Length: 179
Image (cartoon, rainbow, N blue to C red; front, side, top):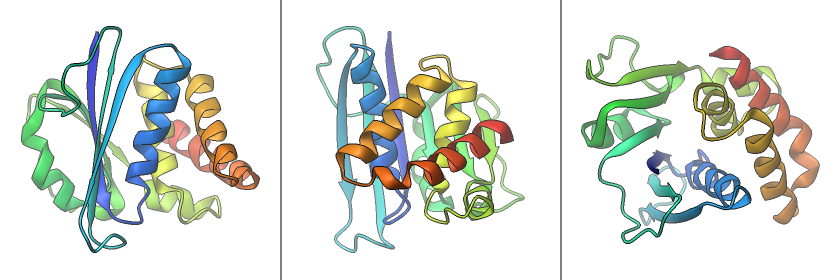
């Protein structure tokens, strides 16, 4: 089993954090993983993405070229990475940052998540990425709801931001319930 994931969006949308949380969850399950970030010099407001590769065997190359999962927090991310998806791959996209009339490849599964709106509704406006993680937890079988939530909380606690876990849990649960 090897799962290739790209998390992409504008700098400041938490896409690198999203990838790190997925990597943490994989690590906690004893899987092998790589996390490979890429971001422009602009940082906040520029583009950012990360490759996350999860496997039960050794990983030779950290770069993802045939995506099983794409988490796209904005339209430019869709433009850049949609073509890299495998047939049958799952696209999670933030409907608040993507044109409502946009069409997607017919051979992938597109999961709309009103991530920015959900995060605002739970008083965590910077938690849109966490809302998408909740959607991933519900739709994907690689992690249970509890495993991914535990990885998220552990990630923020290690960074000294554990006090925000209640708001993050709220955003996570909102995303989980929304799909």
